[in-house]
Amino acid sequence: MDWSALRSQMPVAARWAFLDHAAVAPLPTPAVEAIRAYADSLAADGVAAVREWFARVAAVRRLAARLINAPDPDDVFFVPNTTHGIGVVAEGFPWRPGDNVVLAADEYPSNQYPWMNLAGRGVEVRTVPGRDGRVLVDDVRAAMTDRTRVLTVSAVEFATGFRTDLDALGSLCRERGVFFFVDAIQALGVFPVDVQRTPIDALAADGHKWMLGPEGAGIGYVRREWVDRLHPVGVGANSVVNPLAFTTIDFTLKPHAGRWEGGAYNVPGVTALGASLELLLDAGIGNVEARVRHLTDYLCDKAVSRGWEVYSSRRDGEWSGIVSLTRPGLAAGEAVRRCLAAGVVVRDRGGRVRVSPHAYNTEGDIDRFLDAAR
Image (tube, rainbow, N blue to C red):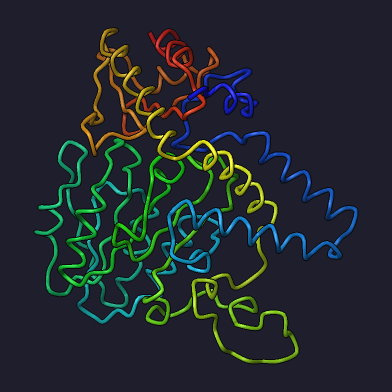
């Protein structure tokens, strides 16, 4: 594919070699225009244009459902951040004292603290140590007991870039009768995620990384069969079947994931996220994945030839858009500072330089990084 069209929609590329999409991504022009259009509408028409806003929110829900191949757009709900989506399950699950949840020891804090917070309800957290950054299925199986109720993992580990075998873990959960939750923030937008093919019971992801959306607008998903089994949290006027009947109190919750959208929508954020999703879906997520594979392969080959050591896996099924690098005699923080001064954005994670290019990046961006951090 010719990726120059996508690159032309990324104003950040004019100044920076931006290689930090695993942190907070820059916005593409259509997302900026969507925010501006909403602001102009609110200024000019106020709430008189509310039908147009709601129609756009509904359209973005359909885009999000396409992204994860949800059976029905109503299985998708909007979240202000990944943490909120995790809390929907952590706080709403029908726990009993003595139950446990299994998670990887190297998970991002937001996928640890909500589960640790359940200790007062008698829920144990069982951690699975990584092996060279990997989360192995056999280790997860060994950590499970007959009281394991939830397995929670990241689709891609944030620091190492290791990609989890969601199919294998999902099958394990089905065998053991365990609820399978996925923190998908480091995967959605760059890897296909299919909740109908992979037995994922719920997932969540803010849009500000690989989906190229703004912070504060993300998506959650709950498999329909679990909707009534999870205690609804964050309930509000928008959680019920007749949300606009303000003078009629009828506490009949929506029979789908919409019950977790209790209050007002982040309309500018959601519409901007939708503009970015349109770009990515039009390009094809499979094509985005192939492009990122090419760029990260190029990075690893060139980096090794210049004395860097690649920590992240490059194996099929394990590689991701995150590449963690080390170089003897060069501290990661110093390398990041040199890069920033040279117009290159990368990140220090776990004492390693984390490089995370997207599909619009080029080999020239990779070369700029290697030259700046030499």
